[in-house]
Length: 265
Image (cartoon, rainbow, N blue to C red):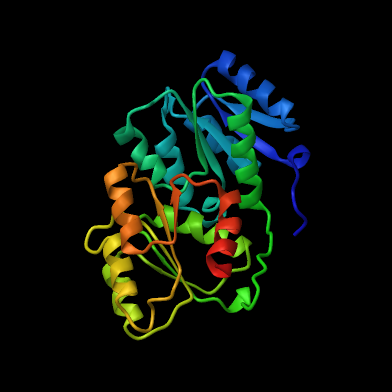
């Protein structure tokens, strides 16, 4: 499939405020994105994307007829929309209120009022999510690399898997908890572990510690993708032997350079 560029990108902007619609559309135009359709709420958005699926959704948090998380969960139930990139625009600052979005596989959260640089970064991440860009590693065949992906959020796993596959990593085994990954790794080998931090039974730190204590797996690079922000917890992550940490939602453009560094070091 031929890569999209900004001028070809189709965006569905879901925003109940006409004034905010105009502000965001103007910012998108400045980035070369001119194909922008709008919807005021959930029902109108569903009607439009069912008829003409966009390449990207940019959405406010609240509508008169629902919320962005309700819309997102509805879309993720259908294979056709399972990988549709989603950017949230919100003035919400409370971490607990945004956590559900961070775990849902969205590309970015733009805090109102956001500047042009933030939008530019989010669009760059969206383009990296949509377009394929092969990863090249010295001494490794990317197509045969065995990846274990562990996250208790199915939506987050889908998003991370999509990014990895865009880089040519297709040999991916997924688990929803570290305990299942440990059972698997007792009998199988891997080349890369991508894991969440918080999981119900065995978390990402405990999973990494198992890996580092294993004679067979101790050398395997570990990438942790997490919404955890506490410095004390992140310090424990590094102490456990994690090679790199990415925030949720993560900038997809960073993953390629991180993987190159992890495998070349």
